[in-house]
Image 1 (cartoon, rainbow, N blue to C red):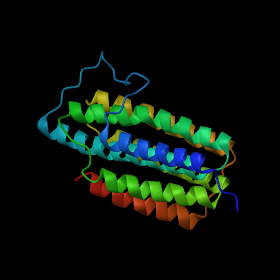
Image 2 (cartoon, one colour; image 1 turned 180 degrees about the vertical axis):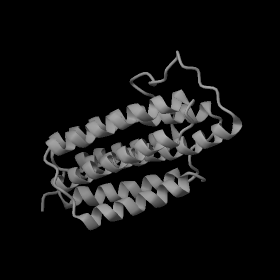
Image 3 (cartoon, rainbow, N blue to C red; image 1 turned 60 degrees about the vertical axis):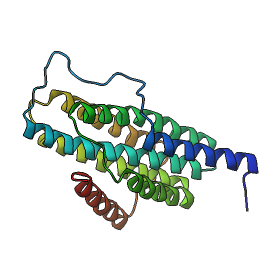
Length: 214
């Protein structure tokens, strides 16, 4: 049985714990500017703000889960190159976390009250996938990102037509998620069994439905 040296294991645990605390309780900082469109002013009614806020809260929850998944997968793998891959993807997803939180603030809305629960659940799934094997872990990334991409596409049809700020953020996120899926495929991802895909889709449906309100 191959067990990591205590200092390495402790470092990995502390890194994972730090990532969780930063995701849930610290103000996220993006490394790239928020992809808003300054030349297109966003003016929304109270009803439109509420609608956009609910959708952006769901998107923020998705980014909380993305942080948990990538952190867990980086923690689980013994492959240093793959760990670097997951960490890089997590850093890129931090932009999305910051942008969606910023947009929630602008809309006068709040993140989901259940974010710690969403994070814990996603971390557990990522940890299981990572422990089963690297190729399956990458396959989990591919399927997750594909489902998120489709989800974001649906939000582009649901957001108020004149909410240019939210729509620009969602469009950029959609492009980034497609790239993350492609990167995972190129890294050697395996195709997940259809029942697993269906289960992931059902779990995502529960999360998005609840997060839309809570």
